[in-house]
Amino acid sequence: MDLTDIKSLTLEELTLQLTEMTFPPFRARQIYQWLHEKLADRFDDMTNLPESMRKQLAEHFFITALKPVEVKISKVDGTRKYLFALPEGIVIESVWMKYRHGNSVCISSQAGCRMGCRFCASTILGLERNLLPSEMLDQVYQIQKDTGERVSNVVVMGSGEPMDNYDHLIRFIRLLSHEKGLNISQRNITVSTCGIVPGIRRLAKEGLAVTLALSLHGPTDQIRQELMPIARKYPLSEVLGACYEYYERTGRRLTFEYSLVKGVNDRPEEAKALALLLKPMHGHVNLIPVNPIQERNYRQSSLSNIQAFKNILEKNEINVTIRREMGRDIHGACGQLRSQYLRTKHSPSDEN
Ligand code: SAH
Image (cartoon, rainbow, N blue to C red; front, side):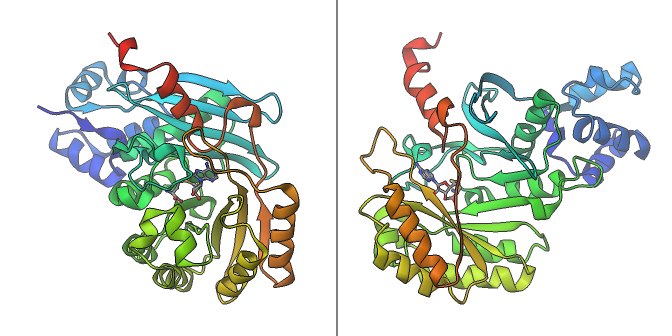
């Protein structure tokens, strides 16, 4: 019999399954608390359950518990980068960042990605597989245990396209914000998408209060298509229409991510076009100096170009911030730790 992924079950589902095993509902509440509040990794750690019950549980369920294979801590700002191993040896990457307003974790939603954005390291080897809800959760859980500090913000901005793993994403959000779990406010959870229109429209109707971030990266279809294959499927007018619907239904202000790539999307004319495009939208722009990856020769815009780009947006009354680069010294951004690991340490000849 296949074991059930117990950390991906809601409290209601867990209660139902335990009832079928003839356990009373209070046992489900105890187990849920062990898993999602006390962050237990093993049934044997659940000391208020009888031993016979723990044994029975282990015959029905497995507990996702990610193992860190590498942790890098920045000397500059304390940022921590984690590489976690999944059971079959696949690795995924997560990042912990300390801000004045609290601790933020950036999680992966898939191992690899099939969206093919030109500047992104996570997509080079394609999609390996979707992550389970428990595997998304456990990135946050293991990191909170390792740092000993409460996580207050979670951004789904690591490897993968969350809308391409939609059902697991929704379950993850509900478990993460559940009052009997870590109880992270939905307002402090951000989902970043490359612009999958049906996914955005569906998310707008879930009754959740998460923040939506759109990876925009260009003010025209032409520039977006140059950088992001998905833009050929969904034109900008539709993507922004779906984002607007998200804003209207949830009341949540939108975030627009714009990675600046030298000579591709960083000219004053693009800044002006962007300002015009976003004027009616309720959101702010997050400018990200592109992180050059080894496989492509995209380069970062100069500091003066970035500042000029920002000034034009501001003059047009668009809220804008430049993303502070965290953990520069530890190979940081955007899936680069994982891809470096895959390149150097995990060539097939290393496997036995
Ligand atoms: N698939 C989702 C989330 C993953 S990436 C999405 O596309 O939004 C999170 C953000 O980092 C996206 O805006 C993505 O375009 C950006 N990004 C990825 N690689 C980058 C790089 N090398 N430099 C700058 N931004 C990058």
